[in-house]
Length: 218
Image (cartoon, rainbow, N blue to C red; front, side, top):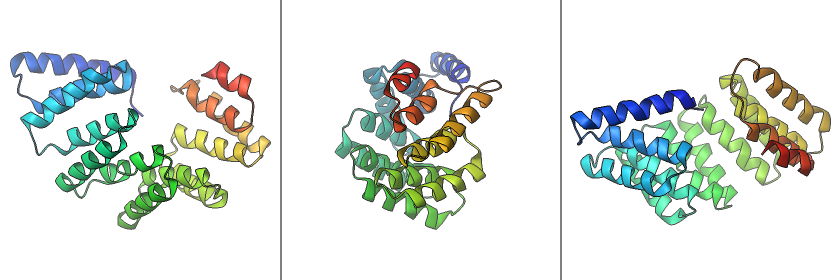
């Protein structure tokens, strides 16, 4: 997860860099990241990513970020194509390989998404992000035992707040109220020393069927 203040700083630095050299692909990519994830200015983000790719056609990360934007917009066929280009440019990137499963996941093709995440784990069994995403894909297919196993591995590798929320969500889907509420309590404890998004708590309450509380947190 990214820190908001650092990304705003990145945006300011990127603008400063572009004043000195408007052909810096990395700077355009940085602006696109902020526009996509924090400002939700999708047209602006798309322009920035395309500009980065035009300036440096071999820049795999810009293709990856554009693939994420296209996924957010549910332009899944275009997203798949963009992730394929990113993988061709950077075939050893575990992050790109994992994110290449996003179009399938968000299109509701959880089996294909799980297949892609497993392929990443064949290359690196200790890559937390792929375990996390595989756990989510398994949960959506009601393969709860495997989902909990994958998420537990991810938590052991990264101890990420989003994995805590996902574990709570899966327990909620299974009707394990005590375990789900324990995840919410853990998130509350973490929020005293680090940023925890309200969404992380909302997904657990939603899985428990506590719609009102979920909407309050959202």
